[in-house]
Image (cartoon, rainbow, N blue to C red; front, side, top):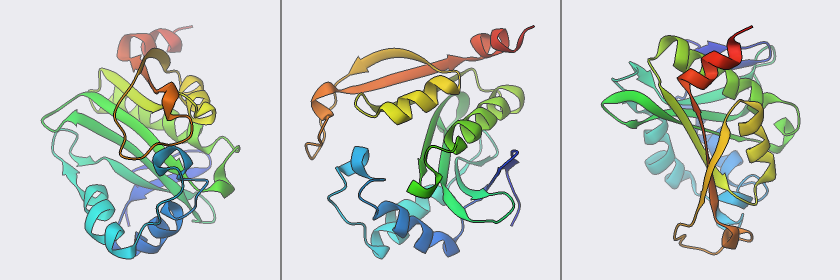
Length: 189
């Protein structure tokens, strides 16, 4: 299977039908899902097959590629989780959403930052991206730290309606961003 992006420690590759079990395991870990659904709602195989996987397999013509990538440890090929680098407008790549979901075994090892930085670099240098945005719950300090280490800066706090109340949701969500101009400035000597 072709690899989309390789870093020092990661290989990001397209998802396939063979990834159903990986996604099922990831989405059924209460700690992984804590800031998504409170870790209280189990995911079924059918939900992965009918919901998640079709989203992960979608092709985006504006970037001539997919937006969701399975993340593997480069040398062992161990599934670590996934990254998303999805155009917010299906017809243009000017603004993309960055996201990630990694299994607990990958937490605290810098994989989320490494993958995020690589996708940002590819977006600005090859895909015509002008702005990268990312959102998380205000209470999700680890995800916010990844965004900051990847070069994104805080934009705003906002409040959305969620179907279930999750611990920390009363604090709202935060948006971060990085523009091409700011990214280029950070690369200047």
